[in-house]
Length: 577
Image (cartoon, rainbow, N blue to C red):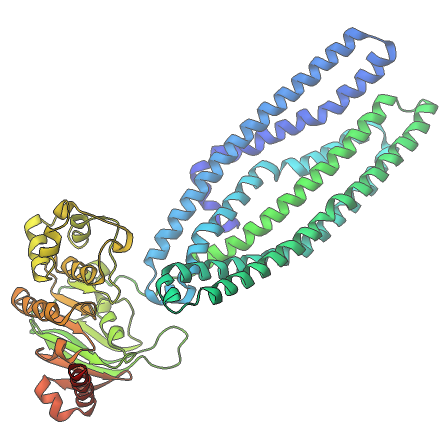
């Protein structure tokens, strides 16, 4: 957790003043039993009402000053911890955005969300409590022992016996609960995963009537979480009875032996009361310290999880920067092999091909054969395990990520739009794109007609995820977004799956006319989508089963022929139906 202390560098004064004012409050608190003892020994004993009133005013003043010091300490601690939490979350979010898909796959999206929210909150709470109580509680314990020694060395022996016993009970209980708290954190991770899956897959769950199964899974996880928390709560509940037994026994001993000393005249009645108060202060300080340690333990467990993300370096980093060569070959794969994180099987194996500038390339194959994986290597979403991917004659690893991805427009399989106007979504590639450029991209992507029908036209507000649009409209808008800025390479990763055949045909025709000089990759499972491409790559279980035009592959590639025959057969059956 101390590794994260650097996020307090802008809050050094607040981090200093918080504990300082807490110590000031502790000093006022330690003075209260002394004033009470004098009130009893002088005021009450002698019947001096003026002295009693004066002592009462001093007690009230000490209380007010202590409250003021406490509020000031909490203000500074809150400022420092809130600033710490803000900087920590910002830094973690920034770091996550530097990670490649490989590292994101390693942690999993739900886990990263939990670490960015719940774990950061736990660490922030830990920092807040450390600034408020970390120095105060030990100071109260030591201060009470020292003040007790100034009153009676012999009776203070009771303190030295009771304090270690109290500490042992408290920390033994904490040790038992720490393991349970760590398990609880894992269960919270699982709850976050289940919640995310259910919210994002709500339609599929209801389509298959699996609500009861999902509810059962969530309830089982919640029950396990409940049991862990209940056991931890029961163990923690033992703290008060055990500690108060020890404290009450110590108080009985103080009163018993103190009474004898009062009788002999070696100690006063007020001093006995002061000793009792100091014993209670020690108990409260140790209980507060125990609670602080529980909070710190939770914060430490969360800090470890946060540091795991910070310790994970991006496997993909900026290259030194290069000047692209003047060459007709805009893209080349040289014996490329790739496998995903924690997978022993290759997703792509020994892939080699060349693409000339301005060519339209179709990528086809069965589901899971590596089509999306192949095109994801071009903008360096992943790095090849072996071999080279060249863009304009230079290895993609030598480009800066900004320069490489500026040259590439990609439409992912899942159409993703963001909350905002259509114009704002269209300007993701080029912030300064004019309305004319946007309209041209919309026209090519077959989006202009339905966008004109929207209220506000380009100022029409898109809801989060494009919920107020159909699947086909979302796909066409994501294609338009990729076209804005006129990238050198356009990658359409199964981006017309939600379009009807007529719209898909018009889109392909518009792309051929409107992307002159642009190299286009069309990833699809439809033969009709790729048959007019200048070059078709046929993938079969991660290997390149054929390269050529439609007519060439029909005669030379058995895999491609099977794809064609299956789709034609399906079309014939559909026509007879």
